[in-house]
Amino acid sequence: MTFSTSPAERTVPVGLGARAYDILIGSGLLDRSATFGGLFANDTSALIVTNEKVGPLYAERLAAALRPHHASVQRLDLPDGEAHKTMATVERVFDVLLRGHADRRSVLYALGGGVVGDMAGFAAACFMRGIPFVQVPTTLLAQVDSSVGGKTGVNHPLGKNMIGAFHQPRRVVIDLDTLDTLPQRELVAGLAEVVKVAAVADAALFDWLEAHGDALLRRDRDALHHVVSASCRIKAAVVGEDEHESGRRAILNFGHTIGHAIEAGTGFGTWLHGEAVGCGMVLEAALSVRLGRLRDEELERITRVVGALRLPLRAPSMPVDRYLEFMRHDKKSQAGHLRVVLLEGLGHAALHPVNDDDVAAVLRAELTQA
Image (cartoon, rainbow, N blue to C red):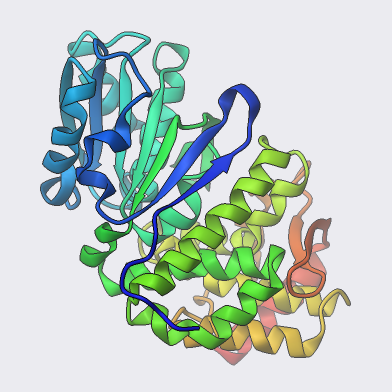
């Protein structure tokens, strides 16, 4: 593939009937007032919810683009990091909305990564039983995954994203220029979600990742545009088929059952979400091999790609029983029984019940090697 320097803008529709919306992908979108036009009446108020790192970089630029479309534009900078993804932080959003006399037509704009997007979306879902919001993701992980699909929420000490709601955005605006200020560790973490969608739904994209991982790590703009667009296309199709994760959408949790256990067990924020998912994918692929659903050579390919993208391959040292405890709090579990997304060949996956002994065997083998 020959990479160009000016990838074309792209629109990916998310087909959800009355809740349908577009994902806009390109460069320079944040500074164009037209990017945000046609969504809301001009007499509505807006609140930009961002964090202390992203706000100084991009909030004023977004506010300038929004002012022609809203009667007032406020801004709230929240603390940065997964450790602050709590109900207490969301209450700060409610405080600003109430003190600013917000109403049911007020609009939230989530400017930041997945933590900001999840909390702002959850606040929008709850305030006055639901107000509109727009996702403006600035991290690769949020651009390829968390900003699309309407999952919102906060963490609980016993589990990640255990308190939340489905609340679809009115638009997702992905300005690839915001990746220029993203630390390399966070860029790498975002690539885990690209590997995930390829592994569960697009074998051709997985082949592409094997060949072009170095271009992604170099931040080649066209390569990033390609994986962001492909990931959004895949996720939009899955969400359009299963909005509330009652069926096929569960495949997008590949790597997450063990990954969430890693995050909870090490203390939220010690491992980045994408790092935990990367490691979780290798372990859940190994579980897929153990249960006869994946070939050894496919596990080897997954391990190579995860490693080549500089994601962690080794799980943190933690008692197997503690892993299992956190995994039983996973939202996919039923009555305390584990259910895990297993690969059935690259590009295919399904949610299956698994027993503790098989999961424990995979974890023990991993922790013995570590």
